[in-house]
Image (cartoon, rainbow, N blue to C red; front, side, top):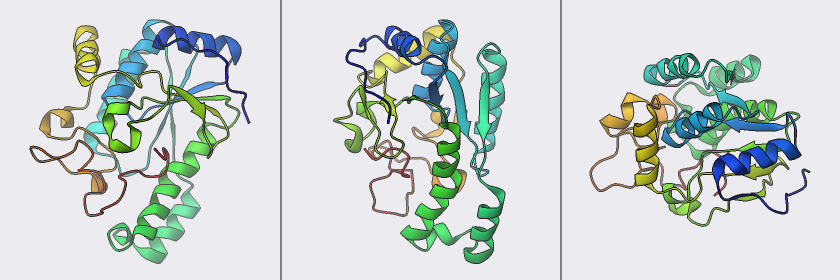
Length: 228
């Protein structure tokens, strides 16, 4: 288990730099290409921070998300973005036994799908890391309202750092527009939170921003990567 740093700056760039100095080549940022993650990618690239960038390609992302991955790589050529995929054999067994639509039939099947497509690849992506950086914000959901800036992650045993935890929606939007950060066009079509295509829909006016995730369930709206 990684040792929790005694003091990390509340400034995202300074905090990331401190962690990179304390854990050389062991700081990994997992991006899902959302607004927060794109802003954080820009911060890392703009300040030449030695943070490894990875993303989880579940195989069921929106075409717009795949296009954004390519645009992000073109925008930040000095900050490589590595994709991690599900294990082929495990995924084949799941689909052949339960079918592609099993996620809609039971919570257990949906969670198993998330584990195969997200959690298992995440653990491979974080192999050898000491610090797991995320773009989580407290304002994203009730589950994340008390999110700390830095913590021990019980699933991975790593230091988990959320540098944008206290950013407001307005602060995030201002940063994105002022720095020309590439974003997913689905955000402008009612998708504040974007995951796999079958599991995400646009939200209605007045709905919670994460209401479109796993929209057929009455759950915590988390896949298991972040417990909240």
